[in-house]
Structure formats: C-alpha cells, structure tokens
Image (cartoon, rainbow, N blue to C red; front, side):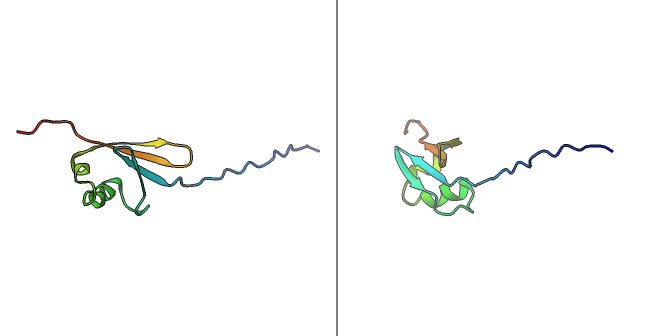
Length: 78
C-alpha cells in the first residue's frame, strides 16, 4: 500500500492595475483602458499640444496604478 502526500493548492489571483498618465506634474486618468498608449497620446494632444512630441516612459508600478509619464522634448526654436 502506498501513501500519497496531498499538497495544498495555491491559488494565484491576477488583477489588472488601472493606468494613469502624468504630464507636467498633472495626473491624468486613463480615458479608455482599451486604448494603446499612442492612442491616449493622440487623444490628449488636443488639451496638451506638447504631448505630441513628448517622450513617454513606463509603465512604472505606482502602487495601485501603472504610471506612464510624458516628458516634454527639450529643443530650441529657430
């Protein structure tokens, strides 16, 4: 007769963290979680024209959100 050891089952729970976007110190809620970051950039360009040429970094784990940061491109006019 053989004895079997039954190990307890571990259950992993996954949750999607909501995204947030940051530009020039302002936190901007995710307009649509199904949009890509590029689509969000295009949407936000109407309110923040500088975002069109901004660099984006992230996602960064910010606790309860995934943070994407838009950083203005630095350049000179002329």
